[in-house]
Amino acid sequence: MSDATQAIAPKILLVEDDRNFGDVLRSFLEVHDYDVTLATDGLAGFEAYCKGKWDVCIFDVMMPRLSGFELAKKVRESDKDTPIIFLTAKAMKEDILSGFEIGADDYITKPFNSEELLARMNVILRRSAIPPDPKEEQTEFEFGQFHFNFPLRILTHTDAAGEKSKEKLSPKEAQLLRLFAINKNDILSRNEALTKIWGEDNYFTARSMDVFVTKLRKYVKPDENIEIVNIHGNGFQLLIRSEGSEA
Image 1 (cartoon, rainbow, N blue to C red):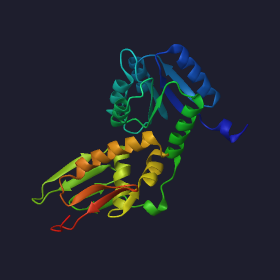
Image 2 (image 1 turned 90 degrees about the vertical axis):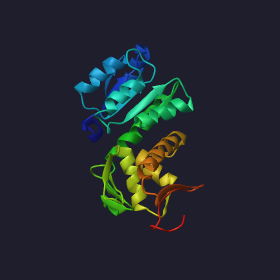
Image 3 (image 1 turned 120 degrees about the vertical axis):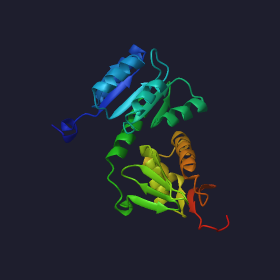
Image 4 (image 1 turned 90 degrees about the horizontal axis):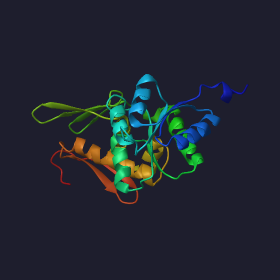
């Protein structure tokens, strides 16, 4: 028996209201050594989610009882880590961005090639298994009026009067802020950030990163000497100005 056969099959929660399509997709994934549980509406999907521990969740967007977006919101209330892939027949940019804002890791529009879904799932699973870069062992950062604890995902702001406020970041927000902090005042290329955090550089992951950059800008806004700037054609820069210096 091969090592691949002996390995524990990744557990997939597939929530798809089209039973025929769901059965076909489940069979395809099972052939490729995934352990798949199929639920056929959003509420049943949430009940299944609560009963197990999953490596990847795949949610159709348009479903009865709970939509895929509503289901993902419920999952993200207590679980920021389990990867979520949305399946949808709608390819509107607004819907795609809404999915990423909820906390999606990927978004695939129907009809799609099953091999494409398989490839994207494999990217997500490989990314989860990648050991940390030894060059990036630092876990706590000071910049401007902020202290950032990466393992706890807590960003603490201390104002001029000594008053503290804290933000608990999502995993991807924390990963992105960590890359900015490691490279503060230097350019962080889009490709590097997308490859390290999302596992690939494409239109959808780039739009997802833009959503997270916007969120991080809001978090650092209280310190007027800190700015996350676009470097056209290259990426972004966490710019730390000395107090009293001009922009």
